[in-house]
Image 1 (cartoon, one colour):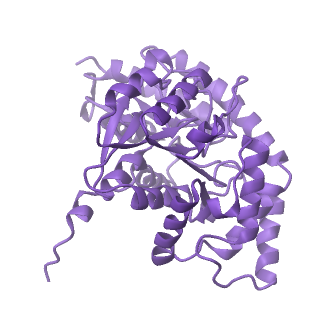
Image 2 (image 1 turned 135 degrees about the horizontal axis):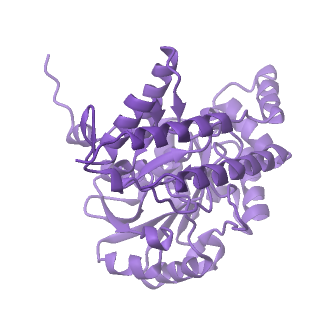
Length: 401
């Protein structure tokens, strides 16, 4: 039987990061000594008190359907967290719990965007943003940030991209994949721009707790009531609490938008997992010692790998201010020749490192910048040392074209 797939299905691209993770997992299963810089998840355990909250929920029989948009206990915990950490006041009616922040972002796209709408996406960007926008027949408008400016987004870069079709600006600070954070003065200027031009703001703050060298996260929604009323803030427990597999994310914003997201969610997934919601309550309201320990260790790894990459001739790399990624520029090697053939782009470079050095990376082309690779330092220091050595040897073995 011949099945005619929808144009939406035909045009969708699979998640590059998940595909690369699957390759790395299979190589490890085959007994290959792989250094995996592709992971977008902490290599730490979920905190013990969070696990225990889930076990208690199971023992107490909290295993049935909940409200589609999340349990009140978790919504109230999110309200508490947003006030405590971000200085933001929301009510539970302005909060929705979803099956991860990716789910929250897609719910937002479903309720806000239609064919012909434009959404400004700064590049480099997380691979999912542009795909989700296109899945609802809207158009991502890419605004490039500059490596020589630390990949910092500015109002001056955004403003020329605004047209009568622009519906929203999508922000991600700290940024995946660059680790860049929008400077406070620019965040204020972007907030003013959104108000002046009557634009919505989607603020993905998944990496807010992972900042370094004195940098601190600032939510754009905290910069005044006018911008707060047009901002949908998205976050997750995945990164800060090493809970990627628990699949709990959330969004906060105007009640009418949140209600519409809940309606969509009720028809697509029903509720987020009941047990994971109880665990998320414990994560948000419980002790944060594990998070502090994790961030200190990520910072140690960040500094080591950054310094190590700077010793490899031909590589340049900005200093990430947050998240747990480096985004080195490897374009000086394009045109070189390996035994497998010429290396012309980031995909071929990533393939070369995988085949030659058993090092997993993610091509920068997936993030809107073909000059780069994304390396996650959410792996052990031993792996980081080994991986850096392998990268240096592999690059040193290339022949000039």
